[in-house]
Length: 240
Image (cartoon, rainbow, N blue to C red; front, side, top):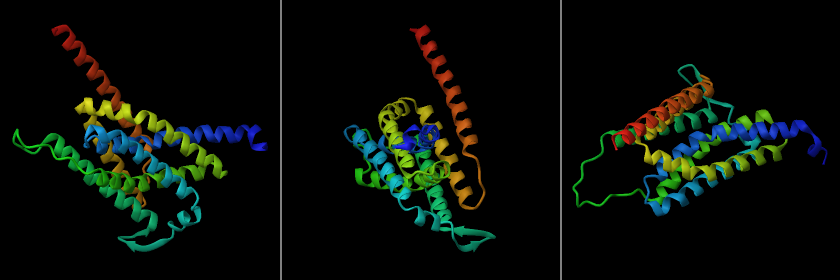
C-alpha cells in the first residue's frame, strides 16, 4: 500500500485523468453528432454504448502494450515516409473523419429536398454503433500513448480512463442537446472534427502537430460563438 501515500502517484492520476477528458472531447463531439441523427428514443442508449466501447478499447490497448509497441515497426515506405501499423490506422481514421465531417456539413448546409409527406429516414442503430467503435479505436491510440508516457503503473492508467469516460458519460447528453439546439455550434463541432482528421493524417505521415493549437482555436471559436448567442438572445428579448 506504499503507493497510497505516494503523492507522485496521485499527481499522475489527476493529471492523466484531466488529459484523458480533454482528449475525449473529440470523441464526445463525434458520438453526439452521430447519435443526434437517430430517433430520440435511441440517442441516449447509443451515446452510452459508444462511450462504453471507447472505455473498453482503451483498457484493452493498455493490456496489450507489447502489441501496441509493435505497431511502430515500419512496414513499408511511401513517398519517402516509413509507414507503420500505427500510421495506417491514423491515416485511415483521419480520412474517414474528414469524409464523414464533410458529408455532415454538406447535409447541414444543403439538405436534400423531400416532399412534405415523405417520412424522415434514420440511420440504423447498428451502423451508427459500428462507426463509433471504428473511430474509438483511432481516438484510443492517442489516449493510450499519452497514458503510457505519463504513468508507469497500469492501474493508474486504467483508473484514469474509467474516471474520464464516466465524466464523459455524465456530460455527453448535455453536450449533444446543446449541439442540436444551436446549428452554428454544430458547424463549429464539425469543423473541429475536420481539423482532428487532418491532424491524424498528418501524424500518420510523420508530421507531428500539437493538438493544443487545435483545442485552443476551437475553444476561442466556441467562446466567440457563445458571445454571439448571448447577443442574439438579448436582441430577441428587446424585440419582444
